Length: 323
Image 1 (tube, helix red, strand yellow):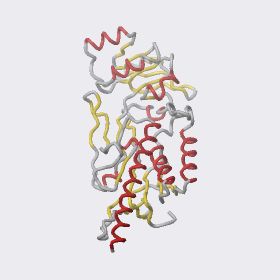
Image 2 (cartoon, one colour):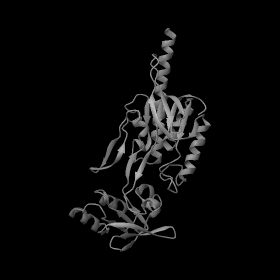
Image 3 (cartoon, helix red, strand yellow):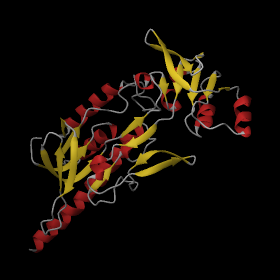
Image 4 (cartoon, one colour):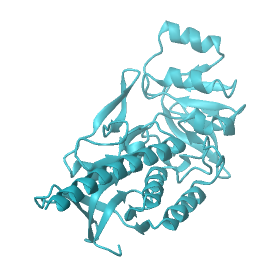
């Protein structure tokens, strides 16, 4: 934090934050990115569906993005933001905010862009967290190709499990639905599963089998082990919204198929929140967004922030000229 006041402070240095920083840096704005260094996709080996960067390791993609943003003057520092607050007006209609990090440092900004992402809350089954992003998966478009034609399990924890099993059947003809804590499928759903050749196994899943640092199967409460090479789970997507909540914004429930799957902060299409001068982009506001979508949202928000600053700059210049 080399200066005390920036045009824009960006909280979060993932794809959305760095994309916003790049756009704002190219617009000749002073930009500070504060990043806690905890990207959601850190456990994954590669990023997929990112045109021009297919199969790039997540850390490499972020390093490239940091270099590009810094090349246009953005300052990027490591830190965790504890809170943000609106500064009192100066009578000229200027907006301003103070951002405070957990170690007590503070910095001011004319505008804020929050791109803090989300946390994947996994079902309480021993072993899931250790294999998350490796063989324990959730998105077929992110990971389906990598486990194609292999034995795949789907862990039912809610009413979306049948839908998940039918989705993953696109990538493998060996899919097993473990009912676990999920509801009993309807007669229609059983017929759909049977028609697609998806096996259904009753009973609670109590753990994962691992050999030579590879997931090899699912352990049931009965002691039976069902060999599998990948396991699909429905994580709960919880927005990292603490900074936005400190400004008075509240997360709302995200529903999918009539089921609450997480929480997010609402914005308009440009990322503007209900608090003037504050934007949000990426998974904190769009839970199912992939990396390329988060980057696009950061670009959109960065452009909107710059446009808002231009409006303020012009208004202040007119007022100064009249004075």
